[in-house]
Length: 248
Ligand code: CA
Image (cartoon, rainbow, N blue to C red; front, side, top):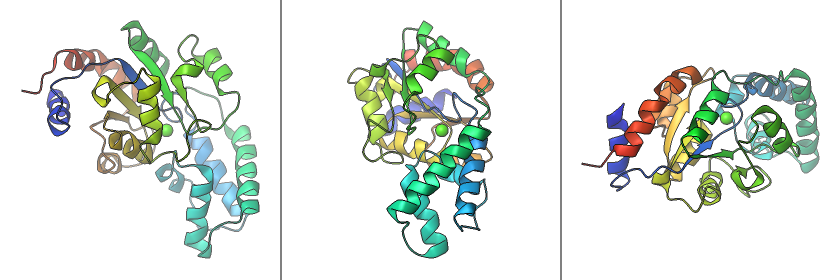
C-alpha cells in the first residue's frame, strides 16, 4: 500500500504529506442512500417517458448536479435537452420517491472512521453535491460534533459541481486554505473521484456500489477498498504512512 502514496507524492512533486483534513463524500460513504437514489431516478425518468434507463446507470452519474443528469438521459433517448419545466418536474418526482425509498441507514464503519479521523486531530470536511436544506441538522443528529457550517461544501456552495474540481478545491479552502498534500479524499463514485483527483488530492475509493473497481481506477482513484470496514482497518496504517512518508 505504501508505494501508492509514494507514487502520488512523486507524480505531484511533493516531498511529503502534511495531513490536516480528510474530505468526506456523503452518499455512499456516510449514508447507505445510493440504492434509493438509483431506484428513484430510474422510476422518475420512466414516468416521464424515458424507458431505457436502469437503476445501475445512475451510479455512473452519482454526484452530478441533477439538471445535468436529466439532460444526459434526455439527449440519449430524445436527442434534445430537457426543458426547465421537465427538469423541475422530474427532479420533484425523484425527490418524492427518494424520501419514500431512503432507509436513512449508515454505511457500516463510517461513523467509526469519522471519529477516528477527528481523534487524530484531523478536520473532517464534508464535500457533497446534495441540496437538502436541513442537511447540517441531520448530520449533527447522526454524527454529533463532526461537521459545522464552516466544514461543509454542499450544492449551495458550488456553481459547477462534480466532476469539476471545484467542490474539492472549496473543501481544501474550508479545511483551512490547505494544499492538496494536506488532505485525503474518501469517495465512492467515479465523478467524485475525478473531481478530487483533478483537485490534486490523494483519493481513497470505497467501492460501496455495483460498479467495477476499474471504473474508479480509470477515474483516477489512488487506492480502492471494497468496504468501509476494510478502510477502517487499514486507516491507522494510512495515518502512519502519511505522517512519515517522504518522496525518496
Ligand atoms: Ca457518493
